[in-house]
Image (cartoon, rainbow, N blue to C red; front, side, top):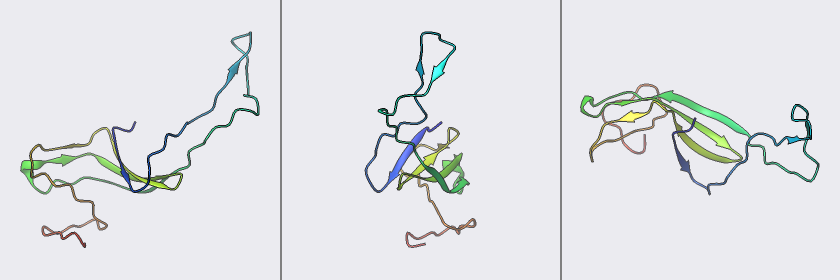
Length: 108
């Protein structure tokens, strides 16, 4: 389940997942849709994933995150357990390395 999605560049597009089945007169029998029905199948790839680590205990941050790519557009997907502290000084940093120092600069 996607709780929050943040788009990283590009335009948000609606994607139709799954298939459409057409029921005949007998509800237990299903048949494939006709060839006139076209569906956009999403191709989702997980590029990276990880868990948040609290650095400042007054602004605890927990939960998981995934960087996914759907149809050429990259998204940051926060899991349903994502929580962070309140306040104007909350900073959530996404870093390439597993170990992050206390003084992180934007170029890192």
